[in-house]
Image (cartoon, rainbow, N blue to C red):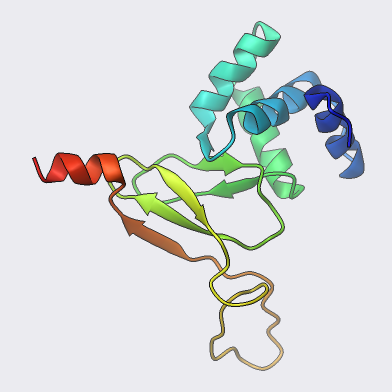
Length: 146
């Protein structure tokens, strides 16, 4: 794929049969640039810097559209804002800090997707399993022992 982040983002949108718009491209470039798991407000601020001005609703609409299309992934954990990432299609899991919400990827636990087994009723086809490990990140754990 091309080295230019904007061209790469536009190509992803076209591959998903989505209209290429400035906000969608800016959201994808922002997520690729920042990496990891980014909350919507951070995305909005970065997109606003890239485009000059953008409404909060436009950013949320772009995030929802990109998530629905499978271009990005949204992870929601209780007590923390939703976080968005570019890593999709590999059924990985997450490690989340209970205090600050810091999120890390954890590769599949066992084999290929859905990575886990369970007593699934006949006829139900499982294609994804989501596991969230919760605890305290290094920084928050250090604060808890002070």
